[in-house]
Length: 31
Image (cartoon, rainbow, N blue to C red; front, side, top):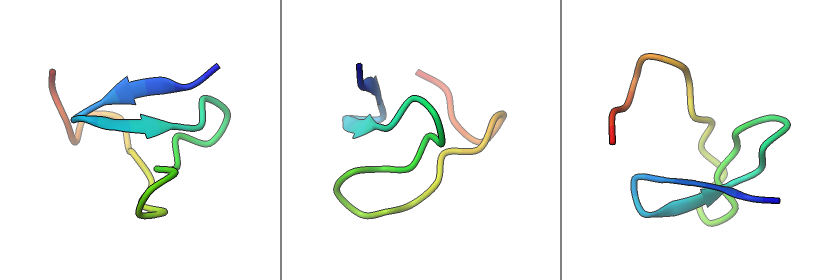
């Protein structure tokens, strides 16, 4: 299952973006 945030899909285990490879860190985004 993918998590979606900021218009991108993220791997739920590591929160790495499938498109750009950037890692989503807690506290650095808001929806």
